[in-house]
Image (cartoon, rainbow, N blue to C red):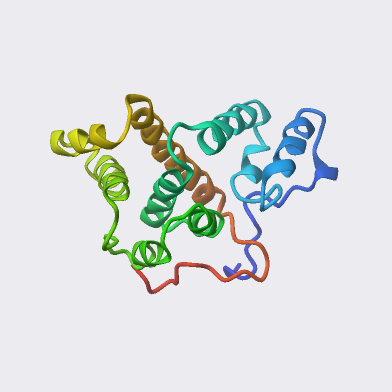
Length: 192
């Protein structure tokens, strides 16, 4: 079977296919998701109890977090870029821009460069998330910088959003989730 003929690992569910344990979660998802039941929701619906708990976490980390939306979305697309997560980038880069993240910052990140000319709070988010996810620690100097611009709650929430979206990237990768039909992948095969 060629990759063109390969069947999806998790065929896309529709609301009509959801059973009684999945339907309440599906109804919540379609109220807020720009990709319907696609993306990470498609595999999450296969485990509705876990799916509900993840959905509740996603809700907090997207809509109730103490981190300003522009910076929160920046953290998400940092993870998306690290993982080359097509769906994550596709969903969150436009939200980051709409929330006020400069297009030049997004373009540098997409090109796998440390963005130039970031305001200090964006530089802290970039350095904090990148250090934490690549070295598995945060240097004292980076933590001190973070404490100058963020509260303790914001630092905890920033850490949680980064970890959560690593998990989302993993879920998307495991399920081989793709973009909606007809949408162009943000990361090309020959890009690193």
